[in-house]
Amino acid sequence: MATSSPFAGAALSPPINQFSLSSVTTAGVRGWRRFLIECCVASWVVALLTFCAFVLRLDLSTAGFLYLLTVVVVAQTCGLRQATLTSLLGVACLDYFIVSPIFSFDFGEPQNLIALATFEFCALIVSRLSAREKRHASEARGRRRAMEKLFAVSRGTLQFDLHSRPGPQVAMLIHNYFALECVAIYDAELALADSHGSCSQAEEELARCTYLDGIDQDNPRNDTSLRVLRSDRQLTGALYMRGPVDPLTADALASLTSIALERHRSFEKKSQAEAARQSEQMRTAVLDALAHAFKTPLTAIRAASEGLLEFGRLSESQIDLATLVDEQAQQLSELTTRLLQTARLDHEKWSIVPEQVPIFNLIAEVLTAQQRRLDEHPIEISITDESLTTEGDRGLLATIVGQFIDNAAKYSPAGSPIRVAAEGHHSQVVISVHNQGTPIRLEDRERIFERFYRCPNTKDLVPGTGIGLSIARKAAEAHHGHVWVISGEGEGNTFFVSLPQSAATAPPSHSAPDSAVTARRVN
Image (tube, rainbow, N blue to C red; front, side, top):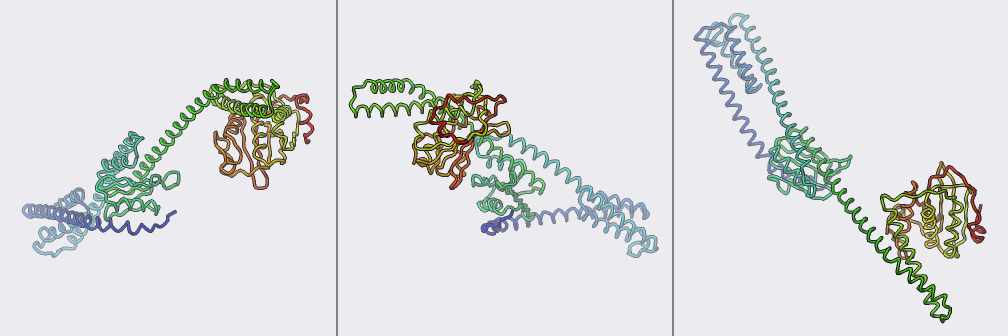
């Protein structure tokens, strides 16, 4: 998925103009100088061999084998071009100084021409094979050295300081082991370019443009390699290198760089998660301590307020004040109870003591306990099988259903119905509570079960702490169940809890719920 960038053309031109001409000129002068020196040495050897063969009056076959040996040596030590030139010079010397008539380029007899042509043909074949073998050996040595360097780089990445940015460390490691002139790494997540060596600002910009273009490039003219860094098929950055490095090695270095960057990101995420976990543990411990500390004075306040109300000699205004104190103390008591439940459920070694809990009785008890809050809402109950039973802590299960019903009463308009349903489904008991409240946004449907999180569009309408639904989820998970919500415009909100269904079935006891609840039951 290559995308063009408006910066690509501007970023490519400065490095090429700056480095290509000088590097090509220097490399060309050095190459031609070495070629001329090697040709001169080979010519001097052929001349010396010709002099010895002429003085010793060697025949064509003997001198030809000596020349062929010289051509092979030149091919092994210098290259194909030098060996080809040596073979042509050797043919000329054989024809002029060895083959009769000497001191002329007349081949004389036809077999001499055939012998010289055969010599040249063999010399070219041997030169080509020798040069190929030399090139293969040189490439093998280069690959072995590159593999050793890659292994050293890979081992070096394991010794990085994960608390520091990986870009400068990787750039320095590649620069040192491969003796490159410049190494630049662009990290897309941080939007920063790190370099090591004689790198210019234009080359760092070139690394960034390579990430934007998403295309790997190699430029042999100025010994530059550009590689896009990928992780799980996503572009994460780019690597720019100036110096002698083959494409396969450049690909391997890009992979190692991607792994190093991803390892650092994983370490940062793990560190952040650990810090969040420790912070959550500390916050839970503080809230637990505060909840325990509040329980005693709240109990005293409620006892005092109830005593005042029972005293019976208060004026109307004094009764109102005592009632207000009692109600607010009761709300604080419920809040501290929730905090204690949260701390209890967060305890890793805590386990429930299971008992058989009939679903019908559970729902009826919760409705009876919250009857005062539900006066403004008609209740509809639908239970497909009154013998549905689950195993668990009765108090925690009541907390789950009670929290759903309490939320339905608080967040739905007065007079709107609240529907409570329960049914068995594949060895699971699914309890749902439906209300006509404001639809919950898609991005909030999972987060509302997080501790202290409240929906932005409703948190200012109804007072709350954001603890209740998190307790419901913790309680459900403690029973190997889970909770979720379905919401839609014009459809209201439906909260679900799924719990393992008990194998045993028990008929519901109708003595627990009062007449007010059973009268509103809908089959």
